[in-house]
Length: 488
Ligand code: ATP
Image 1: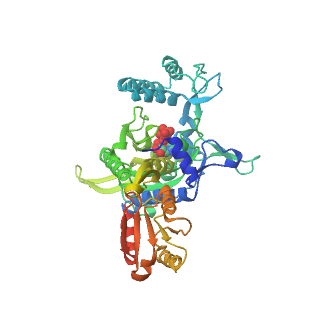
Image 2: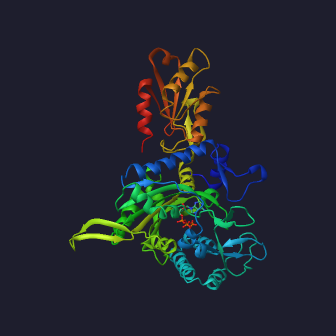
Image 3: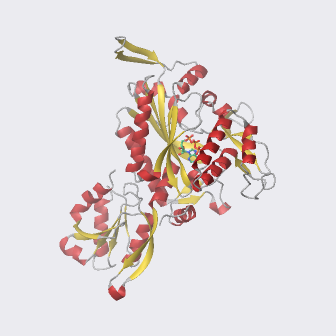
């Protein structure tokens, strides 16, 4: 059986994946810390994304831009004027909600009841009103849909207001001469403003991409669903710069490539779907979300956007620095080089934390197993994380069967011979069954048992997490065996 969100949250805490931030002070809403296993899993996800982008594509290079940026950046990007969510307060409960989330939840309720057309009509109407910035219309829709406040079961709503999501702070002495700056709400702008620096220094030709992993901050009104919507989170974004006119094929290319990647990482095809945006930004040519079916429904994990030359042109206007690229390639229609232009952009943007949550939801399982034979036979349940070995925090645990006769020494010898290649642990305490259980709970794909026979013939027993099957194997084959399993 798959887990509920509540089970996954408690599992994540108990086994060192995710803790509420500053928990001893009762936490800070929508902020979380990653524990010892969580940081390994998250690093593995990030590294695999980084490899898929920069190592598998010679024309994609990385950067690591600062979180703080010149304030005009956010003017150019539209975040100062337009980066806001429509919010609404309930007068009885004094709780604040995102108007669009209330409506989305209602649509999800319809969808769950099989009223697909009704759900689609509601979402389309919401999209229309939000695009037209008709906030009174949004409120009316909430009233018409008889949406009650979840906390107090009333429909006593205030008007809908726009609420900017950027966090601001000061640079310089706070009194005189200080200026207000923002914590970046997305990593993309660090890439746009470095477009020419990267293109020239890395001697890249269009089409080429710039990838980045980094923190982003949004003052989300609704903090819920664990690490799905956080106020401080991490994005993995790639901006792909292309010749105008080629955007449709590149959009298609990245859309398919990114979906295949999620499947390769262990998210099954039937739990992934594309969701085309109903409301497009005025400059956008196309936008699609890759959604994963979380325990709370299909939700976005990644966005792919065809953004035209909007961002570079905006920066060109505000910075007064040309963002042109000279394309030497010959246009077959004119027989002349394509020449100067501001490139178009197709971007892929995935949240590391949302991907982490999807991975954890997918991996978490509770199953009934039968142990023993005949009279001795009994059934029990086990919880485990069926993580892809490539992302598992620990690749193999080495267990000396007993704490004597030289078995711990042998286990440590194996550990030392493999620790440069894989993250391993040696565990001596408790029965072998208890040790297997502990590793299942954190998703370790292999347990290696060292017994007396090992001392005689240099073989060990490898126990597989998912099937619980055991295979006898020479120690000399372990590196290749684990290495094969952990590659994507
Ligand atoms: P949503 O509609 O869920 O708020 P978004 O469309 O605003 O998301 P984008 O701006 O496209 O999201 O950001 C790209 C990716 O960054 C998202 O697909 C998601 O994985 C991640 N992301 C965005 N906001 C958050 C957040 N508050 N917490 C965690 N991840 C986030």
